Amino acid sequence: MASIFKRDGSWVVKWKNGAGRWMQRRTSCATKLEAQELARELERKAEFQRHGLEPIEAPVSLTFGELLDWYTQNFAGQLRSQSDRRVAEKHLRPRLGALALPEVTAARIDEALCTAEAVLSPKSINNLRGFVQTVFSKAIQRELWKGANPADAVPRRKVPKRAPSYLKAEEVGPVLAQVPAEWRCLFATAVYTGMRRGELVALQKADVDLTQGEILVTRSWEAGTTKSGRARVIPVHHELRPYLAQAMRESPSALVFPRPDGSMHSPNVDLAELLRSALNRAQLVEGWAHKCRRCGHVEHSASSEVRRCPKAGCDFTLWPSPKPRNIRFHDLRHTTATLLLKARVPLAVVQRILGHSSPTVTAGVYGHLDVEDMRAGLEQLSFRPVEEPAAEVLPLAVGGPHGAPVVRNLGKAASLPSAPGEIPEARGGVTASGPSWIRTRDQAVMSRQL
Image (cartoon, rainbow, N blue to C red):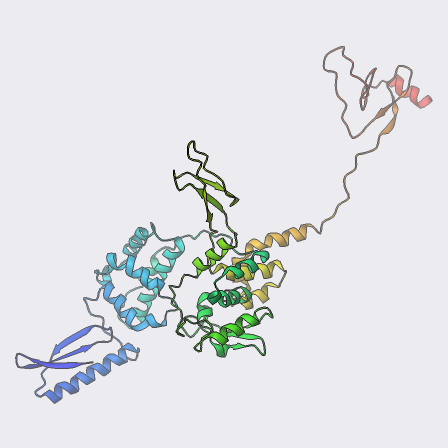
């Protein structure tokens, strides 16, 4: 709200400009009424600037920290998740916040990102780079910054691609049985539909039609659109109907999966910890760490069977602690996609269920499943087994001392004598008179006469 006051005999107007900064101006207004009219005019102009209807002249002293404040005030409500903004406040503001915008170069941004690499993954670094890029893009649109976007020149980090984690078909039932009752309907919906976490907590009762068996996915968190920006319809599995009916019956608000007071869950809710705890109770773990509470001895095993400390003089009972699997709540979405693809559901159908922009995206995420398709293709090949050739009589060879024909096995090679004068035993193509590959012209003629 604009205000006016008198200083040294002149009327001063104070208002918040289009960039969200408080401004003061000494005026030449002779009366209070004129100063009030000017304040209203400046406030109206700032409102037009905030909505992009008028250009904003960037103050010379605008810093990167002030630009972050302006972006938070005007656009933070449009973000589906506030995590990138919080990470930027933690890792970028201390290093870049006091710099004027001309000093925020690509080199300085990259230097700040390199410092954050010690605690952030490559994917998080790329997300942080994208956030800075978006902030400068909005500033360019509103004419707060007239130079090039410095984040465009910052190189992206290479993200290692790994196969998504997922639950096996026989693991889904035991895990759902161990999820707390107040969360079980949400977890079941995640597995049966492949919906994202933000789409689940923003799902409204009006979007669920149990009569037709359809779920309309149109929003994520507080945003009015999904991550892909497209609404999609997901059929309701017959085993999912009781879960959805129970959740809608117990919900005190328009949301299907709200807090106990009816409000939407916070993005900080740790659904991954709930999933890991359910896996531990179902004993679907990577292994067990058996710890001695007396001497501190630790040993690892695939079994939770109780054992005693092997250290001399201790013999204390070891306490088995589960080693949880490295799994996230988002991996329930991967579970849906993986089990569908393993069941030979067409890729285009899985893409529509997940809400990917194209089947290419789905194939890129779940490309590791092509191994099974290649295996099935190779199994179509069928060849007759290679048989060992039968023994045949060589009519041109007489190897025995009495002219007996030599039997030669074409499947085995004849062995040579190991030393001069040594005669090997008759074996395969070798006779007592010598190797069967020894032939003479007279023997061949004799054989033809016989």
